[in-house]
Image 1 (cartoon, rainbow over the protein chains, first blue to last red):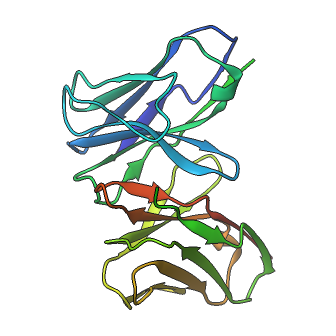
Image 2 (tube, rainbow over the protein chains, first blue to last red; image 1 turned 45 degrees about the horizontal axis):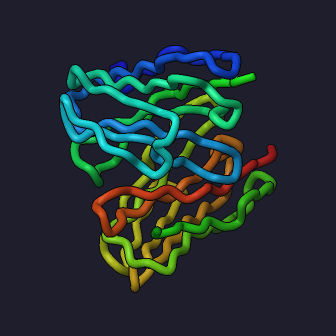
Image 3 (tube, rainbow over the protein chains, first blue to last red; image 1 turned 90 degrees about the vertical axis):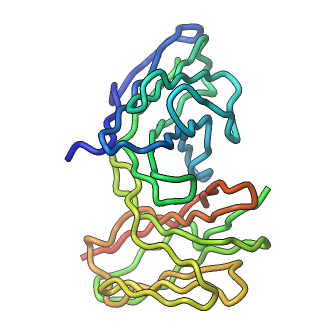
Length: 112
Length: 110
């Protein structure tokens, strides 16, 4: 069982560069989420999606964009990376908004 | 904003000891989840509690939801090195969303 798969696992960017993080789930879940995890701050929700073709802002959406063109995929984009976006990014999915979430193993992103 | 405060932030104990970690809020939650996260991996669900006063046991782990549904505790009996990890609580908030605490980082030394 693959569950939730995130690519890439690691990435180093220079300030101003752009990139896209990919999340794929094989559980047919409607809900998908992108979080960032920083020391001492726990998981903070960036954006989420309640189904194919939908997206919504979370707690810390600025500087990020997302797309959910296919039910199984949820993409997180950084248009112009900033050092403050250095973090570990987690994707998750769930059957409903408050059902337990299944997480990927994270993408460690460093922006110099 | 419904905040979840977890304490202690860090805990280091010897194998065989007992411990309790806490998840507190000033807000009422419809349900609360506990996750464990190991280094280099994503959080994995341990348990969900939904009823005030509810107690759930998972082998050596005992979870309790406060009577007023504002707080929860996790007690581990006879801790083992395999229990090492970051313990996160997450509560269902007013907007039908889940909010995570910052976690308790537990280290169990052999």
